[in-house]
Image (cartoon, rainbow, N blue to C red):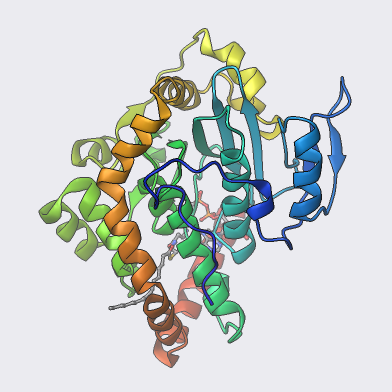
Length: 355
Ligand SMILES: CCCCCCCCCCCC/C=C/CC(=O)SCCNC(=O)CCNC(=O)[C@H](O)C(C)(C)COP(=O)(O)OP(=O)(O)OC[C@H]1O[C@@H](n2cnc3c(N)ncnc32)[C@H](O)[C@@H]1OP(=O)(O)O
């Protein structure tokens, strides 16, 4: 059931992932900086094909505007961007999870890249967490695959050889918060006035469910035992200033600023994110990512191992059980009824907003 992609920092030396090691069935749109001056789009290639081409010319840029994620790399600064691009809310479906993992591996396979910014093409929502529709009347085959893909995203992000910086432009509830907490550094937008404050946190208990142990522990490791215990029990969604005070995020940025980083951002950001080149969160995320990229990678990865390898090992050991618990829990009749009610409420709210 579990996928075989290992965490790159689970061994004590840095492993540069080879494209060949990706699941051979991975098929996605790929932009390749091949024949100048334009990028050539190659669609639906197997990983082996991609690897063959990559050996001939350096991989610079891949994915497309319509992909579930959009990515780009800037080799001069050693920084890449991986942005979720699943309207309307970047809710995490099986396919989005797989796309995040695959793209992260692709970026890791470029030895010139040391940092990645995890972002969203939606300027007001980072990620709405799990796609709740995945949980309603799920098939026996898809549900464990879905959960497994989420576990894999966590393992890949938390254990990446890259320094990971989350550019949290907007809401990040539940598994959206997990993505951010699995990164090395988090920058959140301060919001557009008191009326429109984004929030971040594990709100599961408010939905009548509990964050799985590995997710809950991530909050404990980030903000400490007692504050996490309370936040998990209450299902607290932190607005930016409270998230900063609690240590859920490392930085909150509101001010529009111009900076020499804008020019780099124009080159770095994929087309779908070009409107964010003067966004203060993105500027700060780039500056932070570039700062990490200057640290000797062996030392940086070794220090990451110190804090993360134990929990990654634990995750690998309990993964199968976690999937079984999740599937058993979600398919329970009472949970199904509650989830349906929740989705109905969400839809009504959406309709009311639109009318
Ligand atoms: C040893 C013991 C082991 C025990 C193991 C137990 C295992 C138990 C496991 C259970 C674990 C479950 C883990 C869950 C983690 C999760 O991630 S649950 C998901 C939680 N997410 C949410 O509750 C977020 C819901 N959404 C919102 O609150 C808001 O949409 C928003 C704040 C993100 C954004 O608000 P706004 O900007 O006002 O946009 P909306 O109009 O609300 O939404 C736009 C659009 O998106 C759709 N949408 C939003 N969220 C989701 C989602 N999560 N899934 C699917 N779709 C979503 C929403 O319906 C709107 O659609 P329409 O435009 O109306 O079509």
